[in-house]
Image (cartoon, rainbow, N blue to C red; front, side, top):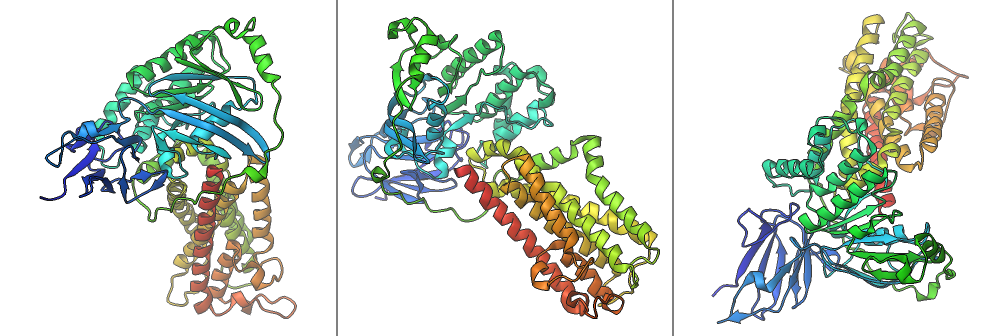
Length: 622
C-alpha cells in the first residue's frame, strides 16, 4: 500500500483539502503521512513556510504548523483506523474561515538603544476586533510594526495563527495593513484600484471571475458602487478611507491591521468606519487590530488594549469605562498613561543571538508583474496634458537649440562637438527626469504592494519597462526632427547615421533613466531627490567631454560622455577638434568605441536599476 497523499488548494478548485483563501493556488501543496505516522508537506504550485522560513519540503510533528498564502495549517492529533487516517479535515486545523490568532509573549523591542515595547504579552483570539489606544509616542505604532515584521523582538516571541513570525515573505502575506495615510494612486478609478489589489492578493491561477466577484462584493460592502468609475483623487476623505480598506478587503484578509482608520474624519463618518470594521470582522471572519486616538466608539471593539509610556501594556481586556480603571475620564487616563516612567536604554548584553535569515528565493516570476506593468502604463498615460507637455518640453526645446546652434549639423566641423553636446545632454536630462522623483513620491503606495508579497524587483522593473518605451518614442522624435532639419555624418562602419544617432540618443536616455531611479531610491524626500539629480545633471553637462578635456577613467561610465563619444568616434571628430594639441581618445576608432559605448551604457542602466531595487528592498525591510 502506497503512502497516503492529499492535495491542499483553494476552495472550489477540487483539492482534497480546500482552503477559502484567494492567495492559495488550486494545487498549492502536497500532504502525506510517512511510515512513522508523521505529516510531510511539500510545495506544489505554491510556496510553503515553516517556522517563518520557506521550506520546499518539511516534516511536521503533532501540533506543528505551516503557512500557505495567508492561511496557517496546524497538524492536530491524528486518529487512525487500520493504519489509515480517519478524517483529514479533523486532523488538520486551518485558519481560513476563522481568522488568525495573535500571541505576543514577553516581547521587548528596542531601536537605536531605546526601548519601544517593554515586556509586552498579549493574546488576541481569532476573529476579534481589538482597539489599541494610548498617548502619542507610547508604542502603539511599534506594536503594529512588530506584527508586520518591520521590528524584530529583542526578547520574546510572536506567533500568528500558531506559526512563528519570521522574516520571510510568509509574514508579509499573512498580515494585511491599512496605513494612516491613504496610499492610493489618484489617477486610477475606484474599480481599477480594487481590481488590481484583488489580482495582486490572489494566486496566479485564480480565475478572473473570482477576482471580479470579490471586487463587486467589496464595492457593495463599502457602499462604493456608485463611485466605482470615479478617480480616487476626486473622492472625499471618508470615501478614500473606504477604498483604502477595500484594497485589503478584496484579498479576504485573516488578520487586518489599521493605523488610525478614523483620523481626520467627521464624527458621523468615524463611527461609520468603526461599524464597518466590526462588520468586516464578523462577515469575513477576520481578526482586526486598529490603532486609534478616537475613544468615542470603542464599544465596537471586542478587546481594548491600553499602551502606556515606555511601551508597556497597562490594560488588555473588554472595553470598559475609564472610571472602572480608577480615572474620571479618558483624558485623565491617557495623561496618567503618558506619565508612566520610561526605562532607560536597552542593555546590549541581553540581546539574543541573531536568527539566520531565511534563504532567498531565486528566480523572477511573472505573477503580479503584468498587472503592475499595466498600472504603470495607465498612470503615465493619465498624467494629463500638463504633465505630458512638461515631459516633452525638454527634448523639444533641446532639439530646437541643437538645430539653431549650427547649420552644418553633425557633419564634422568646428561646431559639431557643441551640437552633439546639446543632443546628448538633452537625452541624459530627459532620461533622469523620467524617474528621479518617481520612487520618492510613490514609495509608500508601492510599499503596500510589497507588504503583500510583490517584490521591489517587480515593481521597479515595471517602471523601467514603461519608461524604456517612453525613451524609444522620445529618442525617435529627437532623431527624426533633427535629421529632417540638419545633415548627418557620412555613413561609416556599415551603419546608417540615422540609426547611429537614434542608438546614441536612446542609450544615453535609458542609462540616465536608470541613474534617475537610483537617485530616487537613495533620497528620503523630494528635496533630497532634486538636490541629487541637480548634482547628476551638472556632471552630465560639464563632464561629457565637449567643454574641456576630462580624464577618460573619470567619465567612462557617464551616459552623456559615452553618448557623445559614440557619435564622435563614428564621425571621426578628432580631425576637427583638438585641444592643447591633444585629441580625445574616445573620438577615434569608431569600430571599437561605438559597440563599447553601447555595452557600457547598458551596464550603467542595469547596475543602477539593480542598486535601486536593492536599496528599496532594504529600506522597506527596515
